[in-house]
Length: 77
Image (cartoon, rainbow, N blue to C red; front, side, top):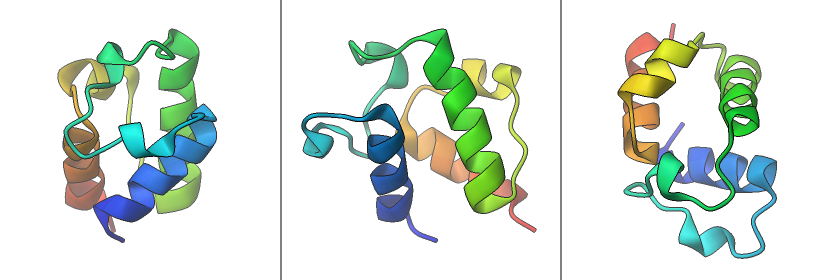
């Protein structure tokens, strides 16, 4: 797994018109599309695609796609 795969999966789940605006340094809460529903989508995506459990509290502690990637890598079995 690499960060580009995660970015591609997130862009697909968020249904971005312009997926290139999502990068490793993108802040989730800075996106106009961001909502609590997207937090649930991220939790489900990470669980199903990477077999890693993250919580709402985890999402509150991170701000960027890179932060999310780092959590996934650190918890990957």
